[in-house]
Length: 437
Image 1 (cartoon, rainbow, N blue to C red):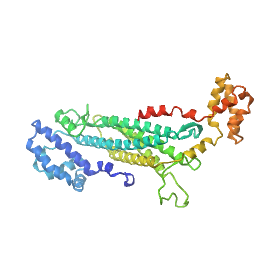
Image 2: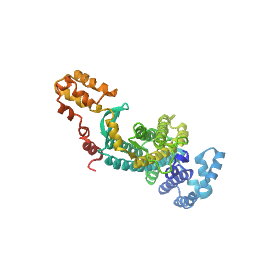
Image 3: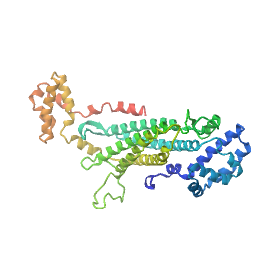
Image 4: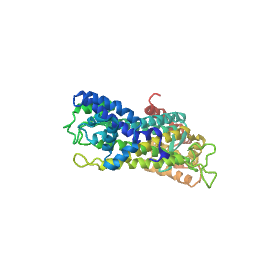
């Protein structure tokens, strides 16, 4: 991912230096287990750690790349360089293992570490959403369906919905992290023919993983497909909330907008512009993260015990998906934290259609007064359509309709236009989302 959309902590997980250090830990922990089993000398395992660990602090990526250009194999290039640093005892490294044991276990370590950062990102976003939801819990605004005024809601309810959605995303990511946190040290086709299963158990525990239930030469890619699909769903939630903010910031609406800092400029041509650039950016980043889910699913169907058609895909989507989503979640948290909210404009917009937002209440009241539903609908619509054309207020027109007033007196009609009716269950909604907080 380009530096513009990368945060250092997440990017570091995918650096060559981090990757090689994880490779070394896998190999060194395996050597410890082999030594305990009497397969290799214990002194050799100690030398591997004693000489290898300092070497990894100054890992020579350029030298490893140089070797790879000759041998055309990344793991062999690393092992060759490690042998240069460790000396004769390096012959005991990688005993009974295959490259995928190192590559797949490393990849899963990287994904679990990335997931931990993403989970922390979600915690930050959820905290801002919760605070702002309670702040605007009772700020009434118009709800829209098809982009058209529907019935009243509150801005707090909008944010509570977003909180609940991202909370579900967090739960899914926790499950996906658990599913991806497996280790395979099982040899050429996963049968442990040349490496004892206890080696896998030891490495898994040391790396914070669990042994893969059954591997071929690789860890099954359905696990990875679910992981990247989960990231894609979270990205879709990012886009959903970003799109909501973008719509609310439109000049004709302007119920909320991104924070506009002192000295910020919105347009090179028009000095008056305040554009929703952050949420537009987030919409684009979400498209990228979603795009990585499909190739992850296509990686599931490998040939027999393995092929490497998945490898080039994962070298790209692993860092790109996690780095991009990390950046997006932190940016969205900042947007919510500083979001400018305009309750008075919400009230103006709510009232702009002359009371039409109360049409359903009138419809229901007529049916409860004995009018057939289709007839009640016709009567309400008869007064509603002129209001759309700017020909009066809805309540006034209803009061002059003798068919309506024959069933509902003026006082009853006026009571149907009480906004509090639409918000009386907000506390219930908040209790469902936030509990007793």
